[in-house]
Length: 132
Image 1 (cartoon, rainbow, N blue to C red):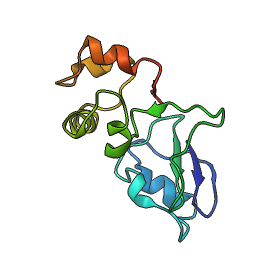
Image 2 (image 1 turned 60 degrees about the vertical axis):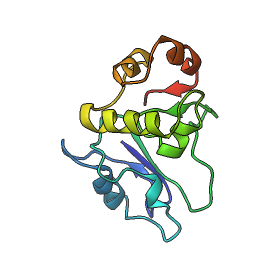
Image 3 (image 1 turned 90 degrees about the vertical axis):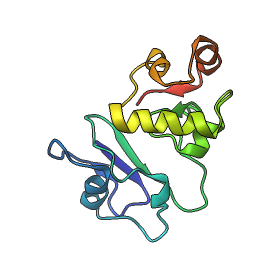
Image 4 (image 1 turned 120 degrees about the vertical axis):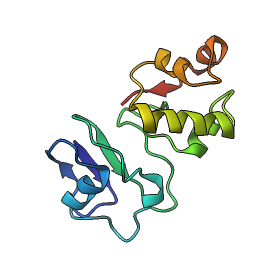
């Protein structure tokens, strides 16, 4: 995985299976004093090829290097999810709870498993999400 942003040594790392985001940040020299760790799920289990981006306090959420404005559904915060059309605080919390219990979403259709998400909402969200 690639650890970037507000860490002492941004780099590509290889960690053992079962490692967490917290382990990746520690392996990249730890967070800088300006790191906003509240925007990172430190307990998330790492997946091959994922990027862990640690934002600095007071900065905007990161986008992909291509300038991709889509929200990563697998790392989005409650506030980011609520910024999506048709997603309020209750549904945002359900999405996070499902993600924590079941693991990452792979496709838009996977969201249909979350109570309160249906065909109409899926149409609204099409093109707004990424599944890193």
